[in-house]
Structures are given as structure tokens and as C-alpha cells.
Image (cartoon, rainbow, N blue to C red; front, side, top):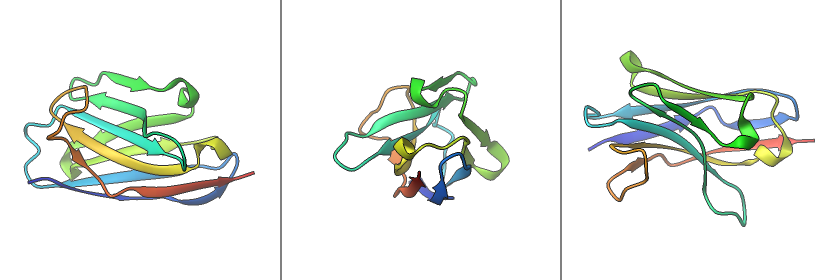
Length: 119
């Protein structure tokens, strides 16, 4: 069983930066995709950034050039570096680890970390 613990969220002013971390415990040998999602109040959860073990990456258009997903295999940790933050980035951010690029029922999800950006 894999457990994910996220950290790094907080409150910042527009233009600021935050770095989210997602630490995985347990066996992750079957994991091929690591993702960050976010959900703002009243909105559906949306994919923000995603990385495969082959280093293929995806970013939603609104964060391209501002967010960077990365991982440290030795620490079983996935990061999301967020810069030039905007108020519309305010949301709860969740990490996902899964075997496939698309979401499946057996994926692992973190508990979420709140990011609040004030203007």
C-alpha cells in the first residue's frame, strides 16, 4: 500500500512562489506516472502537471512557464515548483501516483495541501 503526504502549501501574494512536495511511502515500483491536480471551490478537479518515469511531461496551459514538476527518486518525492503565482492558482493541490498516464481506480492520492494567492 502506498501512502502520499503533501506539504508546502500556504498563503502568498501574487507574484510569489511556493514549492509543493509529495512524499510516497510503501512500494512504488509499479508507479509510472506522477501528477499534481488542483481543485478550487465550486470547480472540478483539474490536472495541473504530470510526469512519466520516462520524463514525459504535461502542463495545463494556464501554468506553462510558471510551474515545474520534478521528482527525486532517492527520496520518493515529487515536487511542484510554482512561480509567478496568480490569485486564480488558489486551490487545494493533490498529488497522484499511478501506473498509467490516465486516472484509474487504483491510483494513489494525497490528502491535499491548500494554496492561497492574494492579489
